[in-house]
Image (cartoon, rainbow over all chains, first blue to last red; front, side):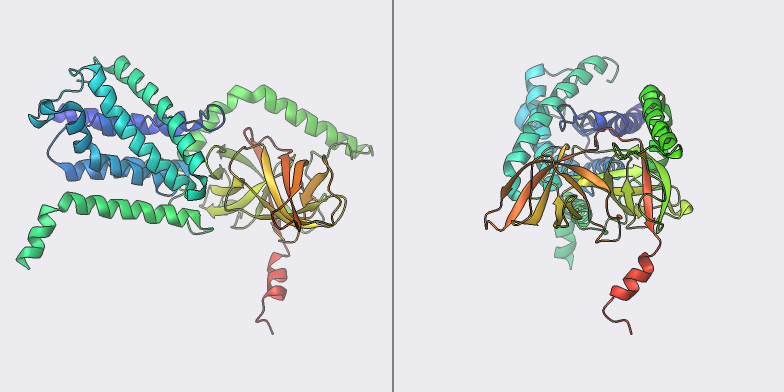
Length: 168
Length: 273
């Protein structure tokens, strides 16, 4: 149990630092940034204490917001996907989730991809909706969502493959 | 009472989610209104300190380029010293350039941002260097933005690449003025609206600040006209301006303090005796 807490604390800090110091400044093609800090929320161990999980997700989003001067958009988007995660888990893993036996390293790639895609899409949609805050620019919102989603998903899959063995 | 407690216990996850989401939403709304984002900004000691550490490391990567810019600026100052005419490219800032009322402080950019719709830049000077809200920030090539929040060591700047900014600007040739806005599409271009139809607008004309807001002095260069068309009511021009500044690469900036600002405000306030 202690190793899980330590692992997640380290993951929290490293993902936050990588996000604000490196990934927020990529600006691929001028505006596309990946938001890989989501991995913390995606890979958080499935435990019954959902209050703690919601709170930690909020805190992570909040820190990213402080560093990027964006008000509360990352906090809002993170806390939403933290709230919706059980539904996404149920949808992508079906019975395995019901029996509390999902291990993120053991499940097959297709299911994991579905799970990540659902949550990343919801997160980015809320993020850009709040950032642009103007429904008349709906095309810009959808465009940003689509491209950032692809970028984030790609990096998340790469990171899970690269570090998958060590993070049990 | 029992039922209320039961209800809260049953829905505690949803209630917590709702509570946290509302907090985040209120921060977001605050950040969209000018001068309200007191709480969440990168001028605090935690993020400001981290950015200044990371900046002191990454500084070494483009020393060569910065050197050549400084070299260029030095050359211009030297030309000025020996009485040569330097109208060709006014890429130097000096306290006599814009009249004697402006005090200039040099600062460095710790965090630049240009890909969002509301971009905020962090600088390494704060209240300790007597930087206050509503001071103008310029680079050797043009304007950058307006100081928003300050802490003791750091300050945030509302960039001109921010959909909430509106800066008064005019044509260099004539005195027709309008306001600068950004449509969040490209960091190279900015929109100038409310220039009357009668103004002689031509492609390539220079746009400068008008000095009407007393934040920027008159005559700070902004950009050149890229294209223009009349708005829907056909009374005003909507002009697309290409910025002189490369907003994606900014390092050394100058903060301008109008020393007559207090007096001007006193005169302009409606309830003064």
